[in-house]
Image (cartoon, rainbow, N blue to C red):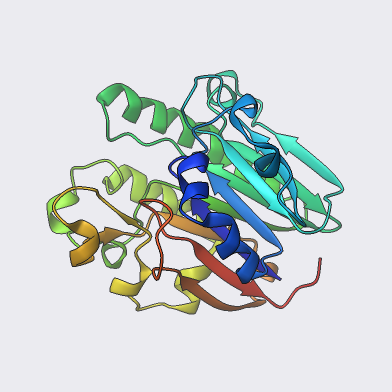
Length: 262
């Protein structure tokens, strides 16, 4: 089973950059999409029903903003849109598909970089979502939550960690929150699948680059995109890679293969 997660920074923009032909070549079972920046009325017929895939979208109410989606090779047994939180469901940040004993979730955690108000919104989301993740883990299912978490967890997860310690995305509170999610003793014990497979990889792990200062050319990046899985599923991960040969967004696709059949 191959699962890919990608922040599109606009589905229409990524589509025009050759996203669909690339994905067809990847033969993914599930593709988790974030930052659609589109509403249902903006999507072409092909976007709403990509060839060979079942497409599901949870769009933001605000035009040209946020939104998440799932492209699934097999039709899910159930699809859940939203967290049950009025503020964040209006922003389109969570969609879940269930396949038998497996659940795949596409998540777009808010960014706090644009203003103090958005950072407070990010903290509100984190406070709400942490116990929800614990509840999901207790369901006894194989679950993977894929998406743009807008947090670089460790120093090896971004190029310039020293100068970013007071910036959104690498704040101590955000990193501690991520650590709690991964803590088997005090948290739900989610597993950062990429980091488990590549415990010491640095420059190859980045999934986002600023549009400023030639960050892409100089590989001054951040690892913001993750697949967090329940332990039993994470143990079946075989390989993980970040695609950088072609660009569809300011993020790069993260692909992970699991020894698992849907």
